Amino acid sequence: MRRIFGVLVVALLAAGCSPRGGDTPPPEATPQAAASSAAPRLAVDAIDHSDNVRVVANVPLEAPFDGDEAWGTDLAFQGDYAFVGNYAGFTIVDISDPEKPSVVSRTVCEGGQNDISVTGDLLFLSVDFPRDNESCVSKEGEEGAAGSWEGVRIFDVSDKKRPKYVTSIRTECGSHTHAVLPGEQTVYVYVASSGPVPDSATCPPPHSAMDVIEVPVDAPETARVAARPPVFGERPVEEGSEYENPRGCHDVTVYPERKLAAGACFGDGVLMDISNPLLPRVLQVVQDPNFAVWHSATFNNDGTKLVFSDELGGGVSATCDKSTGVQEGANAIYDLTSENTLERRGYFKIPRVQTADENCVAHNGSLIPVKGKDIMVQGWYQGGVSVWDFTDSANAREIGYFERGPLRPGLSLGGSWSAYYYNGFIYSSDITKGLDILEINDPLTDPAKSVKMTELNVQSQRSY
Image (cartoon, rainbow, N blue to C red):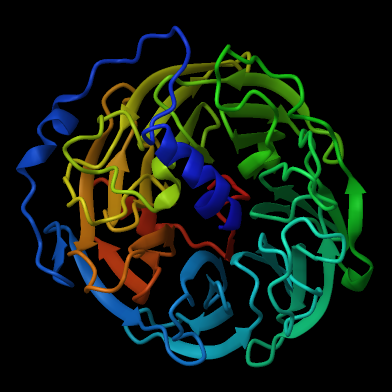
């Protein structure tokens, strides 16, 4: 998370971690959020969870992923396997028995943050730190230098015990995250990257385009940037806005069946038509006076709602404390009309106050597949894992949770990076603790246990 943890965080902290703008009055705080100060304080490394959540197992970070900054990141799933990203590479875990998970392989390939997806025999890693070359034995490069490399790496994981490096594709401003658009013959990868970097050879201003990588399934070594549509250049800009110039997107989520995509961009939420996968067309740009860093986007299953999250403080700040607003560092819930127009209905933030030493903010999550309901599980860094119901867009509420107490002295970054639901269990990638496996047993979520997925990349949504 080079640019998030670097330039962007500095700017946010200098502005008091809360850039504002706009004339739209925010909705009133919900009673649940207003009452959150009643949450108990946990001891260091203690574990707490709601009665309907069970701790199933943990796969700890071990060598070679036991360095100070070998942080766990995003997750993807396929069959009986979980693929766990890490700043130092990725791990493949056998989850055929979630009670007894086992590590199949660990692949060292430093790149930060190694946001991960898998489809078929191909695995993709996003690299948003400059490297001195594209290989897995590269070293950290110079920011913006002509010879540096950053972008997307591709692996063949047909043999889970021995993943094979295939190729790398340089993208403008690197790849902070990505979303795959699966296909039998061609896979498209939508690259989300932040920028620009002044006086840069690799990420020059302005940064208004999105790289689209085309990957032939039978010849992935020939993958290339096939399009760079300028989808973020035309946007409303308010006087004094932190994001006067386009800075790309932090995250892009695609929903191919509905021919829609949503971009959580710096200063904006962007709804796109992807009927032509190489030429996304902007349908609407929304802004929010309470949002600082538009982080991620999630459609509900029916494609009638869209949840945007705000990573206030860039993931390194304590924004779940008493002093931060209940609509800041939270989720905003939008209804998506039949005319593909977004209308904001409400907010959700975890109702458990964290200490001033715990980095906590809305982060990566996924839907829990329950017909007729809109339920999501989500990681909140040291705020833990939250299961929440937004069926009533204006009155979202938490129905279950899991969290740990503050980190041991000497550690400053931790907690759940991503929390996703897959085939009856919740998988949480904890930055310093490894892969947590949880189970929720609740009348609202129990119908999801009958839904069996063969593949899950959360940024590539499918209906169920």
